Length: 76
Image 1 (tube, one colour):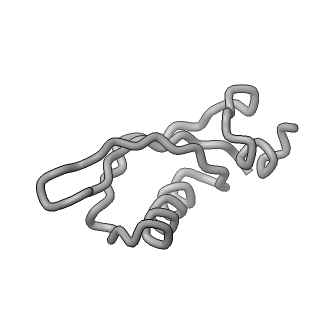
Image 2: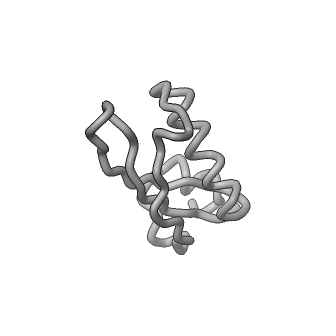
Image 3: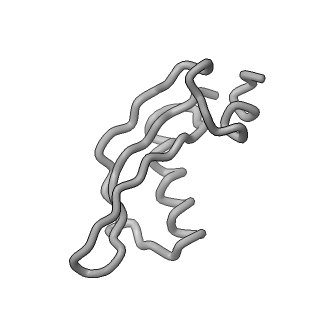
């Protein structure tokens, strides 16, 4: 597994978008994208069309801040 930092926007209402940055542990960038869609959909009820992903970048294990992601990639 690798760590990815995903930046984008989610739709708060019809005219307002809120920026987000999230760290994700995934096998590749396509799986990281899918994980973002699943996470926001299940936790906040946002449809896929309400999520705009701007960038997905791989980050080194020593730069990961989220403790859950550090555990998932085996950096601890």
